Length: 425
Image 1 (spheres, rainbow, N blue to C red):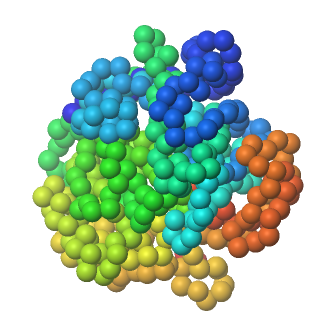
Image 2 (image 1 turned 120 degrees about the vertical axis):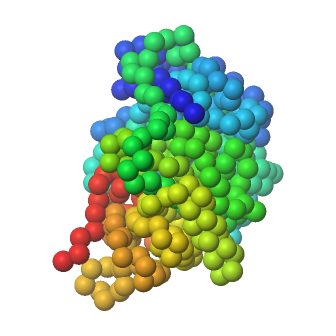
């Protein structure tokens, strides 16, 4: 399976009369983009704004972030299962507007309770908060969706997900006849048999509407762990729909997982990248968690893996699934390296992990979840003049206030992108 990614780096975006790309600048015809995004309805209106890295801008009501992809050649399409049939992705050529995202924002129309409660979040495009959140480093075209008052949260969520994917692909289409600045080729070529075979285990979230992940247009509610080629992820086969603020993984990151890209960079040098196993976190009971963990280990054995690196999305309950998977891999003779954030404050006496197993003896920490961050006042706000930090009073969005890093967008991966670590002294 060979995928060519044509890279068109975006340094600046602006609204103008014609959608096009030239010399690092994306010009967007807002009316045409709006028409493309509203083609199937499901919401009353959409309006746009722009935010660039380094600006004194704070964005709230964030939902998903999608890096624009357009399929130039190949059997499938960008974001298959949503924008076309669920044909296997990861082959042919895809053009990408690299370093920019269509960022969906909204307020949900219906009542929210329990796990289906939308957790609001912050993206600061500069200042200390930018280090903790994803998409502070991308040029963001922010789309605010006005909901139909009578729609359910699930109906509104489905409508804006499809509109955001469609709008992102519409933008990337303007590069179809252009020569990319760079052409990245992804192919798992044959390598020396002496190199260790490493599998990437990607544990993603599914609980319900508002806390979900989609693979080829379908959520993972009744899924078993699934073998997938890494090229499929780069081509948009996995779409994020988890709105638990710091825990979420936007679609942008599913298409640019740092672990996956690092394994590809090292393929044929010091390891043999054997493939990806996607597994759902937050199984409903202990028996299902154990079944899933054993299934991951079985797939890794079928891939003849010597080792596994594991990504994690979610909170405490999903940590049980995660470490049971580490245990199952180790018991199957496969060295497992979990990469996990910590939750215990230094000096508090709290254990740094919600759950662990004796076999997890090579844990990589990517920082502390829940630490306080003082955000400075900003010059411009996108989304709302008021913001409610989790478990705290409402504040003026443009003002300076304290949050925990869990209030910052996709913080668990934002810390990883910024190379946060936890050190054992």
